[in-house]
Image (cartoon, rainbow, N blue to C red):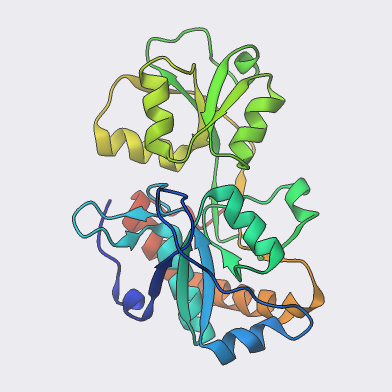
Length: 271
C-alpha cells in the first residue's frame, strides 16, 4: 500500500515543523479577524498539520522518503479544489491540534475523529472517511476480549488522541508514544498489554509486517468519523464551506474512493 503520490501532489509543497517523528522547522501563523479563506487564497497555500508517521494515513515512503498517505492525498486534493498548494507541516498529533486552535496551521489532516469534546474547541468539516477503533493485543492474550477488559491493564497511544482518551476511560494506564510502529513494538515485547488504534491502521500494520503475533481483540461498534478540524470563529465559515464543497465534489467524482482503495484496498469514504 505504500505507493507514490498521484499527479495531484505535483503542486504540493512539503515542509517540516516539529518533532512528531524526529523532524523540525517552522510554520506560518495566521491571524484572526479577516476572512480566513481569502487570506489562504492570497497566500497561495494552505498549511496542513500532519504527523507523517501513521501509516497508511500519513507517513514517509520507505524508498523515496516522500510524505505519502491517505490523508496526505485527500488534503492535497482539497487544496487543489481551493486553488492553492498544500503546505504540509509535520508535527506530533497533540501539537497539530493545538496549532490549529491557535492559528499556527490552517487545518489538520491526520485521521482526526469528531468527538463532543473536540467540538467545543474546533469547527469540523463534513466527514470524509469512516472507521472503527480496535484493541490490539498479543495473539496469545486471552484476558482482553473487550474494551472493558482494559481496566487495570496498560496501553500505549499518541498524546491527545481519542485512543488515549478511550484507554483512560476504560481504566487503563496509558503510555504516550509518537508512532504506530513504536506502539506495536511495545505490545509485541510485553511492555504494554494492548493498544487502541484505528482498525484500518492495525490491518495495514498486520499486512505490511506479516506479523502473526498480534490480533484484534475487540472492535468498537461505534463508527469513527474522520473530518478536518478548523479553529472556531466566524472568519473560518467560508473556509469550512469551501472545504465541505471540495469534499462533496471529490466524493461525487469518485476521487475519495480512488484514494481510499489505493491505501486501504477498500472504500472507507462511504459510511
